[in-house]
Length: 391
Image (cartoon, rainbow, N blue to C red; front, side, top):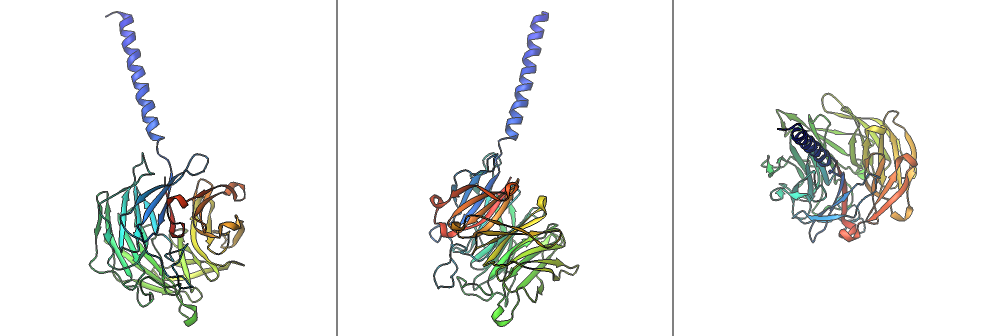
């Protein structure tokens, strides 16, 4: 073999190696962060997915059926509630490459697989699972345990749990854990006292938490249920706490292993501490001036801040997680009729609005709006619920 022939072969091998390296690098960059919203529609529930581009802006939504149906809670005026048609936080959640969404009308929980190469098109894993109750309204997922748990908020309320795999959901219970008499509602539930609020695991997945609102009219505080994890399973006997001046606890978000913040419709926000015995006590009671309906809370670790959206005002209260005091409020367009959940990604805050859109706010520029995406083409805007982030 001539030297020139050998050199040609080596050159081809080198080029092939470079090409393979380039292909691998391209594969790594195909994944696109994605936001998911649940459409709580009695005619058929869906997931809306929107890609997040490099500048923080969103794509148009892609719609995927949950193979379940929604149901609206009853508003104060006696009609179907919406927006905020479930009275809860975490109706749709993401963990690992899974997405979970409640179907309040069919009493089921849907599980989707998320393909990292095409996260905008999640695919159902098996069939939706019965939640052993009615009006499922909030769901939690533990990546460590590979367990999902749902909070039913109707006349047959309670908490049931499932093992999670790419093949689908497997029921772990024969009967739901009771949250009575704290939860006291028909199906569908009626605004807003003693309704289900939120369910979530602590950061270490050593306990499952659920919140049920109280009733100030009869001096009944909100109830906090904690089920410790024992040998990898969610226990059945809860530790129950009530905080005397917290009557309408809604959404919650952990700050660290010991402290979590809650949004309270009546006054603003509180920071609560979890004791070694799983009891819960209030450490900071923060009144937000001129708030109308602060319901949703999101902790952003990189900013050490909790962002609280108000369903009655286009204002976002910001709680400093270190000092326990309020930072300057972020105001957005008043015509959007309030905020109904929020999630943060790389310095942008994505807020579900009262007019069926997602507004994108630049936290690095005093919350300036950079985009408002109309979701009306994706379904009935009064039924949009929850925000979950993958990526």
